[in-house]
Length: 365
Ligand SMILES: NC(=O)c1ccc[n+]([C@@H]2O[C@H](COP(=O)([O-])OP(=O)(O)OC[C@H]3O[C@@H](n4cnc5c(N)ncnc54)[C@H](O)[C@@H]3O)[C@@H](O)[C@H]2O)c1
Image 1 (tube, helix red, strand yellow):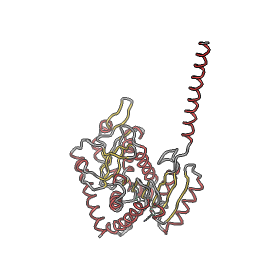
Image 2 (cartoon, helix red, strand yellow):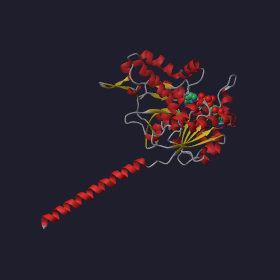
Image 3 (cartoon, protein in one colour):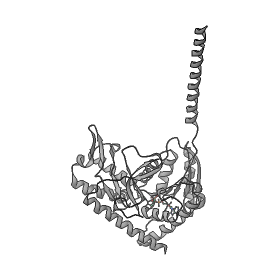
């Protein structure tokens, strides 16, 4: 009798355990197939060439992941409305499974309403014969008014990436005129310069670019930026090695390497007769992806962020620093040694940004 009871007990326990496992498996299956809520991503200047390269990347999951549905909000100005509608038609025709909706508009309020991420690509380009102040003044006006639209209508905690030039100063103006958006949420793109630096090292050493990490772009997204390899490494079969040691050519690192990265945009315009677009779009995706999903352990990236005075960079500029990202927040990497040559270059690009800031403010009055 006792042994029958015991085997019944064992049988029932096993059955219970099995049904619990089945419940666990079916729960995890249904959770993994349960669609996430779509994220609304704004792209301004979406009818332009970066916009045209960027929106399909976002719709394919390159920016936010292969399981993240998106709704694209595209803004451009009235003369580009027809072209913008053409981009919308192509997005529909591409039948992207992750794309749950498209808003294509010339109305900034409609474009900004409810967006979780804003990629600001639209801006006024410098035309022949124009003074720097005239271009600045046009962009200050654009970024002031779009800041208000974002502040009033974007979703809470919206993350902003400014791509349009002058990117750092446009981002600063946007920050000034959207005071309720946390300053940590307003950034500008220097990831393209960062990726260019990785690319130059990879070509020089003939190693895969994915094995190179921790270059830094300091400062402005302009030709005064400082591409720094002093802390960069390459993963080799014998472990991580410093780039400086592997390259073993300081003349190249201090000369052609820096000028090639600084002047890469101009070299592309010369070759293509158009400015960089696919690399800019891809880097914008990298910037947002790492910001939202996090940087890999032991790796940092370059982002234009609001300076808190780290590395004696004047506070109150949008300046490119090395950052790590975790849980949707970036943190400036602290404690890196800065040699005398680097110090001068960090200060030079900060001076340019300080001048740009003064010019931008003079356009406001
Ligand atoms: N930060 C970087 O790394 C980086 C790299 C490459 C280019 N850029 C800059 O990105 C910007 C866009 O480049 P592009 O090649 O796509 O230029 P583009 O001229 O092809 O496109 C710009 C688009 O912006 C639109 N636009 C103009 N004013 C607008 C406004 N007020 N609101 C919304 N849209 C507006 C234009 O109609 C156009 O469709 C430029 O300022 C360029 O200098 C930055």
